[in-house]
Length: 332
Image 1 (cartoon, rainbow, N blue to C red):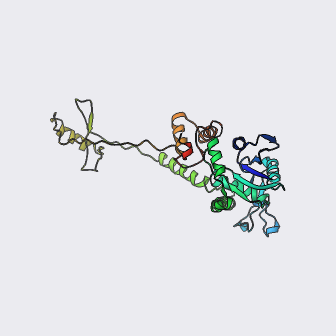
Image 2 (tube, rainbow, N blue to C red):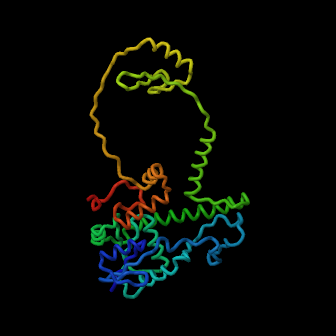
Image 3 (tube, rainbow, N blue to C red):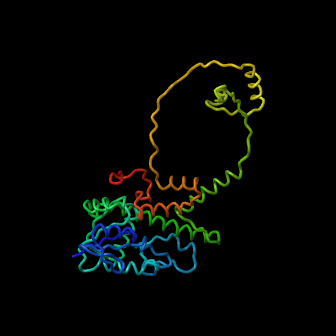
């Protein structure tokens, strides 16, 4: 009997296979030592487009778009195989449903999307085999070995799978329905997306703020000290801690009143010892921001480089995350 391990990418599958001792190459998989390790190449399965729902569900969403078709809410969600990855899905399906396959191991990325990728494959293949979950955040040999010693039943991650499916269905419902609604109303294609549209709204709002910005002059009083330091006049009568003076007449009046006073008295000195902790580790967003600011990299370039550092060189932990922590096995 064989255990089939389903990874998300070929490079991850090769790392897992090496640790498990599965070194013989097959078509779309590696096998050995009682295991067959295959991969999904990302999203093999996706929700079907509205045009692909036929009369079997009592709907007609194909052809010319109209408001009468809305809202489009599938009673049964139809799954579709991507054309460019159909061959790989056929291989994966054959492996996980083979008579000699005893059970499966879900080894997709440890996160919501990784869970969703495996569950769609499992559902579309009509597989009924029991499966365990490999949950690791780094691809060192030690992490993989420890992960397989600590496999958990797949059912322990059902709620994560539900959250992933809800997110995907929400994307479909918002994108498909609002795209058609706005397109029909405006008589021109208007693509709407759960993430795309609010992001574009933020960009437009920022652009409008920049375009409508008006210059405003302000004045400051600065005392240059013999210690080579500088002291800014603190206009506390305006706002606490504010050094800017909006009216030129007011700044000139203060300047005249203070100019005769060439010396001052130190009224108070405070000394404090502060402990400054190092900043947290990078998450993907902060890494993309700093790499863009320092080196001009796009977000896609940063993700590509980070993925290579994770998969190929084993130098960083799983990059597609908002976490700013690493697991104990990565600490050395």
